Image (cartoon, rainbow, N blue to C red; front, side, top):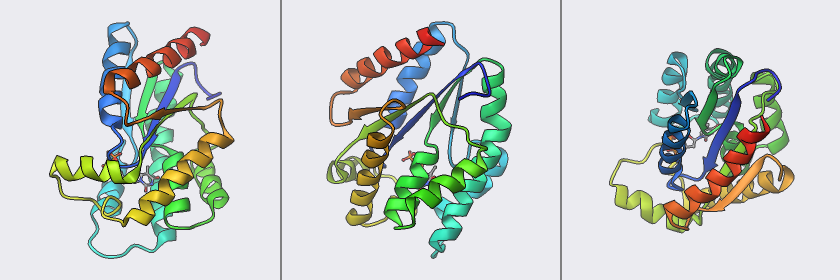
Length: 211
Ligand code: TYD
């Protein structure tokens, strides 16, 4: 991202792809190396965002697809302006669970809205901000469902969608990564957590060395 001196890393992937585990591992490693790490997420990385998160994930009943896209974009606009940009300006590492690629994959591919329009909406909301690195944990939705079932937690609105929806989300992510290979690191989320963490470490180390 051009507006700050910090480094911005986002994690993406379907539900159950293991983002939290990898984010935990990377955060402790960077903190041990003396970096100040801001961990955040979308939706819900700000106080306003928490309210929006509650609507998009837990509202009982339908939300029109375009309204859903706008809610995620509103969360993003506030989050980037009040959390991400200030942290980058302070020279910190922002480690973020989900960003605009989630909107293109879930609202674009998943809800079958126009991917370019969804991306443009988010770019407008975030005044063009793009991460330095996006780690995509790619997993077959059937394998992800087994993980989610074994976690024994109630599904949110998106997790509760059908297999076809999650298949489209995965394809949407892979198309994004193919279009921007320099920003994306795509990893097989079926590999062991240690293997994935090693690959992330190598890439993040070279990113930090270049900054
Ligand atoms: P969350 O509990 O944060 O899930 P995860 O641990 O999988 O990140 O839920 C976020 C949900 O919101 C997830 O199902 C993906 C969805 N989502 C969108 O549909 N569009 C978006 O722009 C974002 C950021 C998330």
